[in-house]
Amino acid sequence: MRILLLSLQNETEDAGHSGSTRARMWRLEEEQTLALVRTMRDGGRLAPLLVCLKGSRLHERARALNLPLLAVSGAGPGNPLTLLRLWNWQRKRKKLLIQTVGEEALALGRRVLRMRPAGGGLLAHAFFLRPPAPELCNGRDMTAARHILCGSEHVRGRILAAWARAPQKSAAPENRSALLPLPPGICLDGFDPAPPPFQADAGRHFVFGMGESLAPRSGALLVARAMSAIWQRDDLPPWEVRMTGGGPRFREVLDEAASLGVESRLCLLGEQPEADVLAHCHAWLAPGSSPEEGPATLWAGFAAGLPVVCSQSALHLERLRGHDGAVLPVAENDPQALAKAMIDVMRDAELRRALGRRGAALVRDAGLQAMAERACRLFETWLQEAENAGGESAPAEQKQRAS
Image (tube, rainbow, N blue to C red; front, side, top):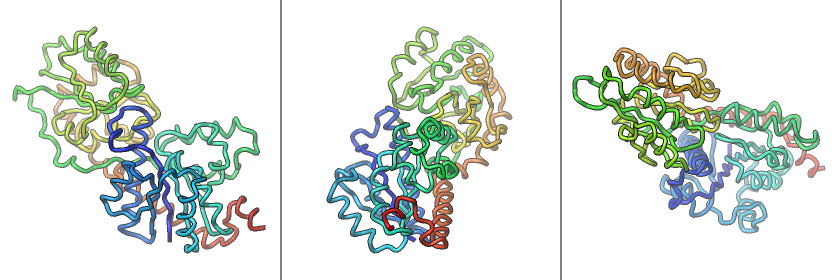
């Protein structure tokens, strides 16, 4: 069964370390896309072809992995060369699932669907971190899809809200039941073995780590305020906080730490491989409240076998899926609660061990491989349903053309 996977993020290697929200989203979509294509290529009954932009980071990485690939330039839906290449490829396939990743591929996905005969194509979209703009949610490129994969309830809720605000004719009612969950995964490479446990009498600092620290609603200012509540305690080991990630808030966070007198205990490290940073940490902080936070901001601590102090944001609770005992929970936007949790983690070795064990037991299901396997099971089900339904499975747009 053939799958055309369209992923048209425009990030290049030179722009790979940008801390903007869009760059973080593109990097996450890139990781999910590569995992999907590799899993389909290496097992199962699905035969993929990845379509991406020539010269993009995704193109370079896919080429290095020797993935089945079609790199295109100017991949808008009206580009004649792109359309000709896709026409020649797709016309040899009896059944085809067209799966897009991200809003950049919406228009091209629908254009390929329109090339297909009635019943011969199935269009699906995936949005792992954030939904498309409301005007795109209600456009034909979006509503032509039979299935829409949502990385979180935030994504699903925003799409439903856009449909609810639009005229009824703008959004296909049948799509409302086709918004399916597919949480994004994280790369688990490099996290083994777990860092050695902290020894209070070894003369070393107790190191807290934190990711995506300079992104909006990361909780970095909250951490600085919690640090100010504990820095004069004389019953704690020496400690520090290491914050990673790019973004626009470097000066804001540094100034806050300086004004509170804790800048000497704070390291702002910028973009770093998370596995390398976590190898030198003893606990992981996930204090943010953003509904568009990357999954590694929580799951990286579990992957490293570390105790995780986690805010009770809606996204964190959703990702934990009821396993609240795997983290030390704190209320959102409460620096005193966060300070207490940090003290408890530093002082209680048994608490650290228990949290590390519970988190490590969950992490396999949070990996890229697990995400890709869930997606492939969905793809196989959709294609089998289309085979069984024959021409009845064609979207309304295709049936109108056929008639």
